[in-house]
Amino acid sequence: MRRPLALICSFALLAPAIAADAPEGINLRRTVTVRVVEKTKGAVVSISTTRLIDRRISRFGNDPFLAPFDPGEVVRVPASYLGSGFIVHPDGYVVTNNHVIDRARQITVEMADGRKLPADLISSDADADLAILKVSTDRKLPVLDLGDSGDLMIGEPVIAVGNPLGFSHSVTTGVVSAVHRELKDESDKVLLADLVQTDAAINRGNSGGPLLNAYGQVIGINTAIRGDAQNIGFAIPVNRLRDLIPELMNPGQVSKMDVPVKLTERRTVEPPATVKVTVLASLSGADPKVVSTINGRAPADIVDAYAILLRTKPGDPVVVRTTDGRESRVSTKAMPVPDAVVQAKRRLGIGVEPVTPMLAQKYGLAVEDGLFITDVARGSAAEAANLQPGDVILQLGRYRVQNLDDFSVLLQHMPAQGNVFIVVVRGQQILRGQLKLNAATSHASGPGL
Image 1 (cartoon, rainbow, N blue to C red):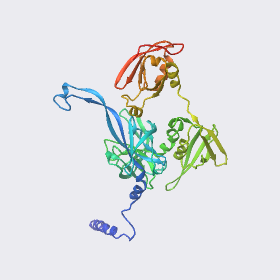
Image 2 (tube, rainbow, N blue to C red):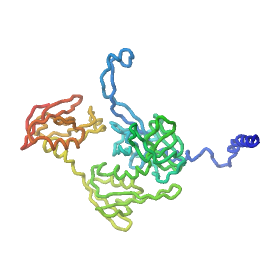
Image 3 (cartoon, helix red, strand yellow):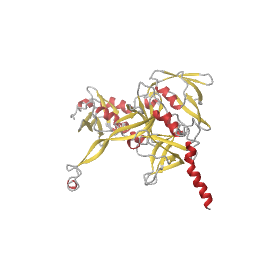
Image 4 (cartoon, one colour):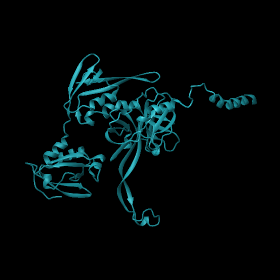
């Protein structure tokens, strides 16, 4: 038994010498990982957000002896959070996790070259934990190629790039450990399903960054870790993102523009990693047809197709040419104003829009939900009650108002005339008063706030 062991030991001792004597011209340091990182690093970004959190402030600070005698008051203070993302289109569209930007008042994207750019939230899907941001720059932006997660092999190499614990553009490697995994909460409720499991080290701050295959294609979006384990991370399959692009980049949601074209994507994979994409268009309820060009441009994939649509403005035509030689021209128009907004103007004499954390940051608001008053009509019930542009409606009658849906329901149950209790936030003050409604004109005088 000793001779085979000696042979193995001898080979182990010779291995470094064999590596050192590699043929001239072959760089053993330039591995697949190095090549992938060099190819993709410019399109991976760090994301920092600011949001408000509740914190208890005691007059005695953290003094362990005196603090129990003064638990203090709960105040809302800004806090910073870090995450990752990657650029998917030269127009500046960036993919990340929803939980990275959730309730964010301010979003900043740091590029690989150190530039820090403000980002707008285009759309998000909390259930899928995906979000699309947009940055504007006068420089050409590098992008990552989207792969296909439908044929992942257990054990194939993967590379995670991101911003773990604030260390930007960190690289870890591993393999696909499993597919079709689920994440559950303590009550066994499924939070995320059909995930890719990897042993590539993923830490806080990696969320939203890409999980890449050996060809530098995105095959997943890093989203979560198993806190009580080592090197068990999870990523959202990239096909989930690709399938959701028609919703995440829908002009009706992003730019409030009605474009009567539905685009979808059909993918085929040629081994080892060539993803061939066909964009299909459905117009006026007809069967989908293969798209040749949209407004004169051949879309590379579903992201590019919707980016082309988002460049149009209300009133601009969208011309879709299909591979059968047909050309369809559709008109675009602004989406109709929500009925709650129309009724608020008609009955109360105010213009409103829902408060979001980013709108709260823009106007320095103390709250992050409710309805922001944009204008007050002269002679209206709102003017008589001393409502002002910049106020935020928090309550009508006995009910809390958090969004337009709440407001729409409450307006339907408001009396045609009489007094309605209202609570608004103005600056740092909470004000209470009465709206006096008049059935004939909706204009009346009443006690001011």
